[in-house]
Image (cartoon, rainbow, N blue to C red; front, top):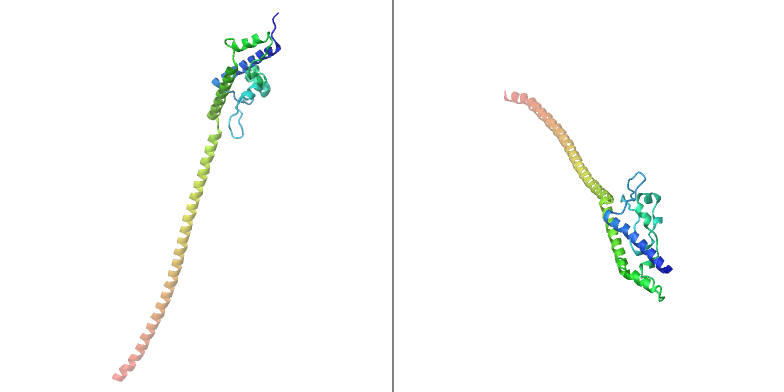
Length: 230
């Protein structure tokens, strides 16, 4: 009975894991990475109000380490496709196992050359392109639903409005100060005018008294003058 060498079996199993993971990544690149959600279905957000996606690999090492342990039970229930992601050794993304043994050489040659199978170069290319596509899709998803920039924009608008209000309040304070100074100047002028008017009245009254006194003196002198003329 022809049985496969254990290294070839492990290699083929790893190939299957890669294929399963690639299938998930391709779906996510097309339809989007699932969102983290609360039990009521609402999206989870970080402290900057940005929505949060479930875990996704971003490079070859994280792709190899990617498995179900990186998800909560709720996420695994919401995304059944995650049940196919299983960890494998990073070295699996290297070439197939090599051996000089006659029963191994034909198998490794078959792994590398069978139509429809991934070659070493194809694996790296497919995984790398899928990772880049998922990262781009994830960034686009977050950008579309990210409330952070909107909130920061509103905060900036409020800061600008507060600054303008302070300018306007300062202008109003200046106008009030000018009006107060003008009022004080008017009161001072009126006080000076009233004082000058009072002084003028006193002087006029004094002059009138002197005139009346002179008139009386003239009148008192008039009979004497008349007697001398008679």
